Image 1 (cartoon, rainbow, N blue to C red):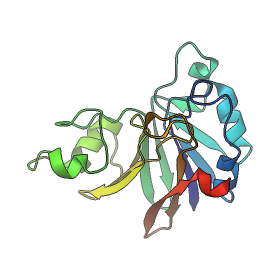
Image 2: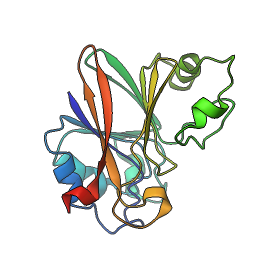
Image 3: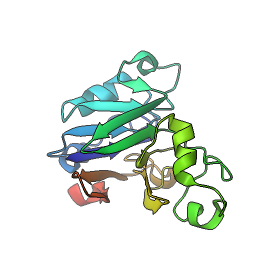
Length: 186
């Protein structure tokens, strides 16, 4: 199954509307997982024209999407035999919420188990974790857990410009994530 991953849309703010390039990047996806900083239900409605949407995490309480049934603090999704946890601000024990590429390898305590820590966060064993917050795309596997941050389509690395999303490909025995630069669709 092909899944579109997106986070930190910040609309309005990072942009006034979703970049049309997102629709082209998500062509053929069967599900979209949004990992937070959504700001309004219109963003999810726009994405849902492409595929069903589940969203998690940091939604500005002053905006209408806070009560949107597609949004929860965290989500658990089962796809093709994989258990996916979706959250906005991934606070990793021993590191905190600033998970960037290379952070886990460099700073995660050697005597700890990432899979156990993720199970505590999600109240369920997960093999894939989708998160946001840092606006920097990454896909890294540690201790059997694939950690993915799709970055931001509107504020990559906190810069207001066209950014990126990711595609997660799942089969019953394999998984892979690929960064998609939206500028490639301009």
